[in-house]
Amino acid sequence: MKKTLAVPIALTLASAAACYGGGKDRITIACGAHEQWCATMTRRFAEQTGIEADFVRLSSGEALARIKAARGKPEFDAWHGGPADGYEAAKKEGLLEPYLSPEAARIKPEWRDPGGAWTGVYLGVLGFCNNPDVLAETGLGPVTSWRALLDERLRKNVGVAHPATSGTGYTVMWTQVALGGGDQDAGLDYLRRLHPNVLQFNKSGNAAAQQAGRGEVGVGVVFSHDCVAQQQQGYTKLRVTFPEEGTGYEIGAVAVIKGARNAQGARAYVDWALSAESQRLGPTVGFYALPTNAGVTPDSKAADLSKITLVDYDVPGAGQAKPGLVRRFEDEIMAAS
Image (cartoon, rainbow, N blue to C red; front, side, top):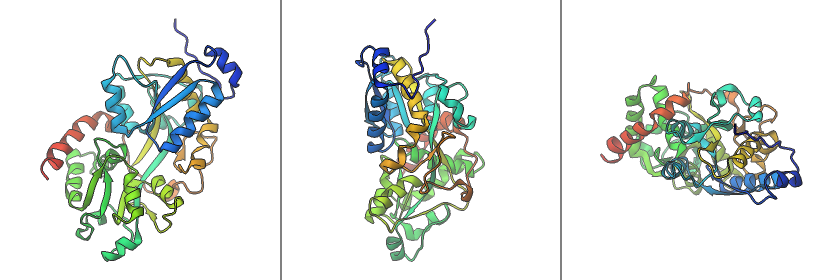
């Protein structure tokens, strides 16, 4: 029987090298978060374990497409970052190798797949990234509701990501489904009405925060930690607000790819990503999402869940519906524009 190897987080460089054949093994990560965060995570993992690691930065939709295209001969060993909706879609396609890490015991059950297909490493909450100066020119203040985002004074003044390429964009779509009581038609209808106000549907989620920071749009619909990151990079006028009707959220996940070239190394990476040591690194590189490990205190700049109304976000349902819902968005909204 094939043994599952879980590398302890405190493993020394020397013992890890001995365990993995002198440190010659390598893993490649499909990484769905900020470039600097991805670089820090892979570098520190290599330092801890002696397993060489590199990454390719991909949006959620891109990662899923490439993992699916390489079925049977995967180019990645693990997938790290991006909403769990995409991981659920990959699970449905049989693209993930279940792995129950010892570190998962410190993660809430609702933040991980019960069969170990994926485990949550951070939480991001959808919010509005407001540029008060741009909004003032339209006669509006910071946006505080999904309803207000439809105001005709915001024509071509909203930044948001495309749900086919971006996990952020799909989270926006599924949030509207949730607010509509699970009605997919209601979710699509909201995006249809929002479309005239959208400057463009971006490839990646944090692009809308960058647009707001540069003054290209009055408001970006993003995970709030992406707006905070822009504030920390000098766009101090930006203001984060959350929709009063309720908002969606992501469980940023990590998983082992089915058929990974270095499955043992990928499992070791999952152990590392779930550890308290790893999850404390985010704020050091401007990543202010909420940690999932119970032993990590959220940074003061992270979203305060006690002050935010969350929708009932059905992650498995969102993942299963994703292919069809994205196709309908393309056919019924984008193609019709």
